[in-house]
Image (cartoon, rainbow, N blue to C red; front, side, top):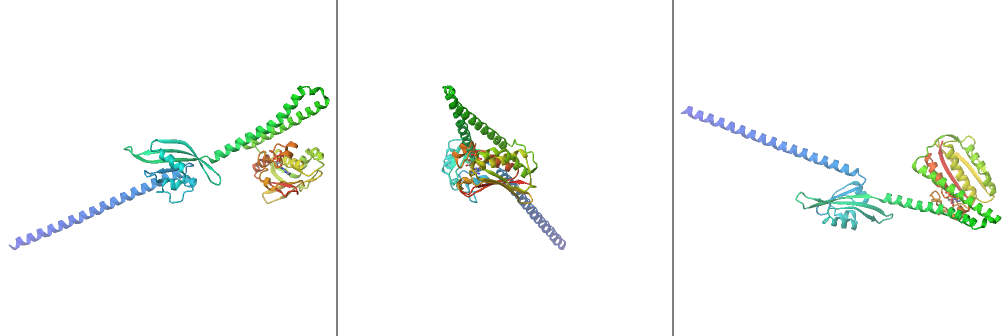
Length: 390
Ligand code: ADP
């Protein structure tokens, strides 16, 4: 009897131990499973975060602005370019489209996507201190079951293209105008000659003179235009070498001596003898020639033109051309380096100017790594200074 009870007790203890071990094992398994699930979820979250980060980096590296909208027309994704284009305030995600881009035409475009799969090449103008132009491509997104799933908008900033187009059109209009003026004078003189004026000696001399002068003007204009086109396209290769500035100035003064004499202008070269610059000698002559020629053309009759210079720093020297003429009004000072800009149109034309000389000077000096500026007090002359590397 006692033995039976002992055996039963033993059995019970063994069953208890087995049950306990089973429970512990089950719990361990459950815990491992939970841990594995957690690890897997963390790995998935990390993969999603990495994927999102890569997508954002990819979108942020694009020049075009990209906005992805959800079904409720709220911003789901906006890249950096879009945030900058529309000055969106962060956080952008979750904002209504109109609140984010603040442009009714964009909202109207998105509404069109309810009936059209895509709207491509739509252009809008964004008003502001300076207007901006944007081309938009919008595509509707669909869920796999065909229901609307939001939209993708791609914004291409056309402002710079439009600006350049404007500059090009203005340039072409200016060139045509500048070419037409001397051409019609030449044509007029030739017609008058053909109509019989050639038999009149006085008229013949006068008309041939007109043809000669305006043909020269055409040639100058074409030379300057070709020079600017070359500079623009970077086709001018600078043959930079140590150049003695005083000597370069002296040579230009000699070239222009006849012109200076016609206006009774005295030219002084006050550059220190040993001053050197790293420059292409031909281009340097062109810069000096344009500035000194202007000083003669626009300076005071019987006045003085002075060319001076100084060492600015370890790296740069500065050369200045000063006249004692009427100077340049403040509103024109910043513009005289623009193509075809003239502070005094009548005077420039009368002197045979092309309106391109200072634009060429600026281009050439900048190609050398220097800069050019003008100082002038009305009535007290003008001083043009440019820098060159030493
Ligand atoms: P232009 O062929 O008309 O001389 P530039 O480009 O050389 O063209 O000069 C642009 C304009 O700047 C000139 O038309 C003139 O009005 C003004 N300008 C240039 N140099 C001087 C100067 N030394 N004094 C006064 N005005 C000047």
